[in-house]
Length: 578
Image (cartoon, rainbow, N blue to C red; front, side, top):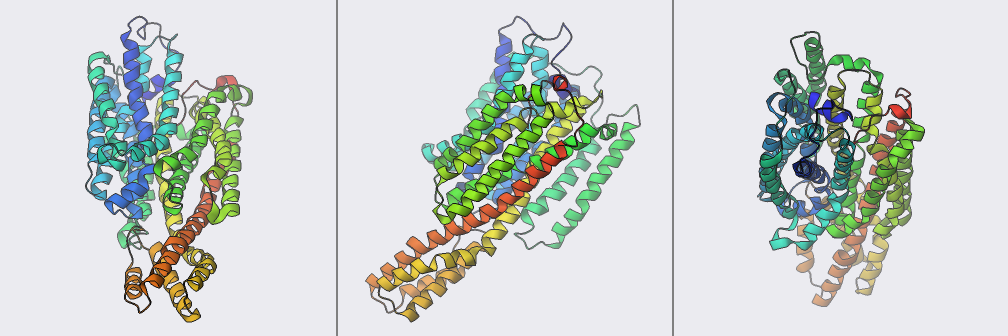
């Protein structure tokens, strides 16, 4: 993809770039505002999931889709968006993407239902895919070779800040509850930024396109999108619907469609008059093939971790969104530190930098598992911060240089197409990771429910004895508590009240016991036993899900060893990560 290729190169013909006009910094601000919002909207929704689930009555599968479909739509539009900018003009496609993203953000904020929100997130992701590839090309044609490294460094900082500030900014906006908007503020915050960027973009961004750009591969883009949606959609919602036939059919179709995409692109690659999305000759490059695998596996780890992390703190341990966001701040800050220091590490270690990064992530995730196992239902968020800081440092060492290291091993004129495909599979990895981690997490909440409720029984029995209940009455209450908790943790919507719980509450309210005793029993069950069991259940389930991240980062570390050995000085100066 020529547009991304242009942005990836740090040298350009002498006549490229505006060396004198102050407007170039306005152009940069507009372009970076788009990157910031795109990265922000990848992570800001994580901390809002419990709030929007409660407000919209969404199921687990639906809140997973709120996150996953954005990344999936983003991935499907990335390579196509770059080619559209090459053909029709980067400024034009960028502004169309910005307008669509702003409108989609307004629709997300106003969503009356989970289905409407999911549809709006798809539109938001598609528009992100239009904007993202244009930014590096706009920087390339706006700045001289001398100033370009500074502009690219600011680009990298915007990617990092957008990712880092997402959970904290999201928690703060929800906690502020401006004009009663609650979680909706995380989308409305894009509106003023988007409108200002549109106004300045129309006035200041120069138009540019790729000379001799070839036509769009619509058929290839359609096959690729169909294959990816056939894979992700059933993974996200199949469990909730007990794996109906259509979900299994889609899962079976997805590898066939992706294979057909490869066959079709291979056929186009052999014809001089055609322009494939992905020239299949790239797959002969070991760096590209291994790099794709590393990207999809690695990016299946971090976002899926934070989805379950925020669900555990907020639903399991009653943290507010802002408190949960603050706990994650150590991870975010150390990502920034690791990113800033990664260039120096790359100069010394080259490809091994990625292995160091994944190794630190493995240590951090192991620390999270150990902390959860040790603390159990007595977990305090601050206890996770040291492990998250180690993981964050590893994330910085990996995210910042990963694209440059992978592309440094590619000796091909199709480096732009390679970079576009890498960015695509990173977003696909995010969607797959969220889907798989969701299946594991929500399944474990159900299967661990009985053990979690049993852990709360000793204290419950003591409280019931203090309330004056006989042993027979205590046995009846504890049995009812366990039944209700089991049913609550195995339903699709944790905010709902299962029939068994409603029936038990009614029986207790109509029982012959004095009102004072009923109140003591109610307080013992709902005020102590239920929160204790919920904490134990979420802590145990989250601990077990983190082994998914251990697998992702461990496999990434092994795959890094399969990359071609390169000299540190050959690594391209590229802002890394999706």
